[in-house]
Amino acid sequence: MLALEGLVKRFGKGTAAEVTALDGVSLEVSAGEVVTLIGSNGAGKSTLLRTILGTVVPDRGRVALDGRDVTRDPVHRRAQDIGRIAQDPGESTCAGMTVEENLAMAGRRGRARGLGWAVTAARRATFRARLAEVGLGLEGRLGTRVGTLSGGQRQALGLLMATLSTPKVLLLDEHTASLDPKAAELVMAFTGRLVAEARLTTLMVTHNMHQAIRWGSRLVMMHAGKVVLDVRGETKDRLRVQDLVTKFYEASGTELTEDRLLLTR
Amino acid sequence: MTDLLGWLGSPQVTSLLVNMLEQGALFGFLGLGVLITFRFFRFPDLTAEGSYPLGGAVVAALLVARVNPFLATGAAVLAGAAAGMTTALVHTKLRINNIIAGIIVMTAIYTVNLRVMGRANTSLLDTSSVFDEVVQGLTAVGLTVRPGAVATIAVTGVTLALVALVLGAFFRTDLGLAVRATGENEGMIRALGVDTDRTKLVGLALSNGVIALSGALIAQNHGFADIGMGLGVLVTGAAAVLIGEALFGDRTVGWWILAAIVGVLIYRFLVALALRVGLQPTDLRLITAVLLLLALAIPRLRRPVGA
Image (cartoon, rainbow over the protein chains, first blue to last red):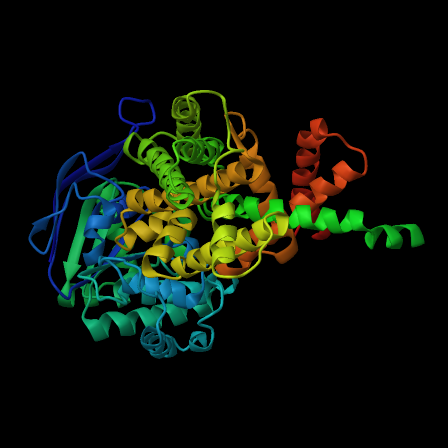
C-alpha cells in the first residue's frame, strides 16, 4: 500500500546547522497494517510523515502509494489518498468556520469543488450521524464555530475529517499529545474504532511507549533518521517498555534520558 | 442639547444622510472587495489601488467611445478581475510575497490606466451612465423617475444587495469554502486536495472585480475618471471593514458581508460629518487615519487587559 524507499532528507544543507532528518529510511506498509512510530526528538518521525503527506520533498528516495510514485506530487494531488491529523488541533481544522463547514470541506477531499452548496440537508444528516459516533455531543453543534470547541472535540472532529472520505493511508502525528489525559483517552478510543471499522492503513507517531506497544500491529522505532527497530506480530505483543529502552540504548549508544519519552504512560 | 436635536431634524442633515447613502452604496462594492482579501485572505491587497481606478478608466474610455454603459461597466469588472488574477499569478507562480505582488501590479496598472484613457482625466459629463440608462428605461415603461441622488441610491443599492447576496451564496459553496479556508488554513485545505494557487486566483479575481465595479460606478456618478482616484482606496476599504467588524464582531460570512457594507456607510457618514463641522477636504486623509485607528483601538480597549 505504502512503499518508502531509501528516503534521505537534510535540512539547512551547507550550513553549520545542517541536520540529517532522514538517513536512508525504507519502509513497506501493507494494506490494513497499523504501524506505531516511536523515537526521541529529532529522530525523523515527523519528517517521515511529512514526506508521505508531501509537505517535505526528499533529497533522495521514493514514496509510492498503492504502486503510484508520488514523491514529487504536490500535497493537493496526493491528498485524495491521505488523511492526516497533527498534534495541534489548529492544523487540521479551520477555527473560523463551523463544524459542518469543516466536514463539508473534508467530504470533498481530492474531488472537484464546484458551485454546489457545501452543506446540503443530505450531507448534514451524514455529518450528524458520524458526529454522534464520536460521543462528545458534537452532533448538536453543527453550526458552532470550531474555534470555540475544546481541544479534544477539535481533534475528534479533525479525525473524522481525515477519515470522512476513506483515505488509503491515515497519518496520525501525535494527535493526542496536546490533550489532557481524559480527552486523549477519548480521542484514542475513537481513533481505534475508526481504524478498525474501515481497516485503515495507519501510521501513528507517538511519544507514549505504552501506547506504541499496546496499539497497532507493528512497531517501528527511529533514531537519528534511521529505522532501528521494526517488529510485528507476537514479537511486538511481547514487548515491554523496558525492552524498548534497552533496544534504544543498543541502537543509539546513548541512555534514554528524554523525560517525555520515559514518563508518558 | 436642543440645538443638536434641532440640527438633527434639519434639511442639512437630510442632505447629509442622502449623501452618505449615495456615496456609501457606491463605495459598498469597495468594502466587499477589500473584505475578501483583507479578512478572508488576511493580507492587504494593494492591487485595489490599481483595480479601482482601472474600473474607472475602462468605463470612461468605453463610454467616450459610445459603448453601452452596462457593457462598459461589465468590461470594467472583467478588467479588475484580470488585475486580481495577475497579482495571484505573480504571487503563486513566481512565489513573490502577496503584498509585494500587489504593489508590483498596482504600479503597472497606473500606466495601463493612462494608456486606456489616453490622458490623466476623462470627463463623462456628456456621456450616458448606467444610472441615466435605468432612469430612461423606467421612464420608458411609464414610471416617472427623476435622475439624481435618490435614483442613484436605488440603482446602486439594488446592485449592491445583489452582489452581496451572490458573494454570500458563493462563500457557502464547495468552491467558496475552499477559497475561505485558503486564507485561514492553507496547509489544511491543501491536505484536503485543494490547489490553493487556483483558489487564490478565484479570490483575487472576485475581490478586484468588485472593486473595479466600485470604481466604474463612482466614475459614472462623479462624471469623470481620474488617474489619481485610486489613491488611498485600500485604506478606505480596510477602515470600512474594521468599523463593521468593531460593530458586529467576528461571526458568520453573512455577517461579515453585512458588516463591510454597514462599515462603508458609517465611514462615509463620519467623513461627511467631519466635513460639515468645518474640516476641509484637504483634511480627508487625516480623518481616514483617525477613523482607522479608532476602529482598531476601540475593540481592544473594550476588552479587559490580557484577554
